[in-house]
Length: 452
Image (tube, rainbow, N blue to C red; front, side, top):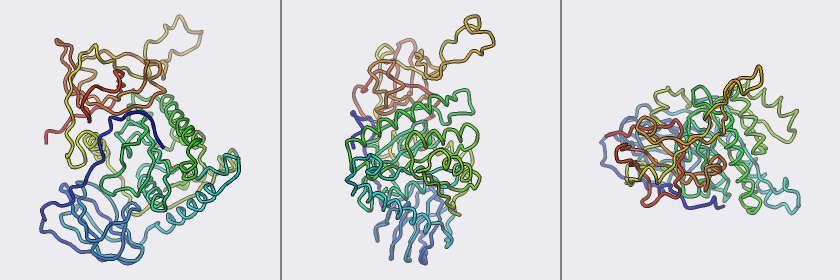
């Protein structure tokens, strides 16, 4: 499945694999259907499978090969039949657990696999019969949605399917940087260290880490971008029976109350989800099951327990994770990439924001009306220090400004300097040469590059 256009995304990341031994070797023997839960400390951790079989995020560990995991990563090594794991390094915490929801998760995968096989074997002209499962994972913050999503994708890829992963969580960003919604075909089990490849990602830039709760909130823009993404995927599925039968796995935000709940319903409807997996909250399960049973009788709503290894993440940790995702985009997971510094004249680039813009005077509005801004208005931004320095900007594929809202983006740049007297702007890009477009999109996402 091609997602259109040349990309500014960096190349797939390579794991360094071996680092000097720390001298802190530790072996852990896991019994069948148990897992080793690990939180990496401030230093990288090496880990390998000594014997048996084990997996991380649904992806099997190769035997006797050391893998290096970056600082502060949280993950679990699960075994179905028993395994011995060896660690080299210091962890923040590590412990074994034999009570996991993995059996229920793998049962869900088995049902989805059966539906994919039925869709592939269908000879009917009805689109519904050849459509594989469209699974949307919902739940509150810190319920394990991203982890379950990775498992379902890896298990499907292991069976030879190529499901489409859709990430609607602008707060963290599993496919690309935060502030974006994106989709990518998954052709192989996910690498537990390197994560998703970006080569085929279809990305729309929202520009903020939440659709609410700040001056930059723009729920209508978020809904519009979700709809644009869904429409492109729908067109792709029409001409690609293999992807259509494999279906989708959709990750969502942890905002489930008030407007957040309405956004969940919007996503379920927009992507024509056929399976809703609810993690970690009985109330949300009950509300969705009641509503969807009345409005969409063909949608299965399934309640699943969250893993005991899921812990609440502090606000500071979330911010740190976002910064790490941006740094990873430009420099790679182990800083093995070298982004390119480019300088352009103000006149060579045009920067826009979506939403806001000039408001009509009160005298021009009907009596009793409130003055509101247009959430989809594309507004030019003056290039100056205050607005753009340290900003992360998206490079739009739009050919005209009025196409920006409906266009996906080729990648991102990071503004390192704005020279007002010389009318020059300097930015980092993951690849050299001229940008694919002169139209850049600004949001509220910024990043102060670490000097470490």
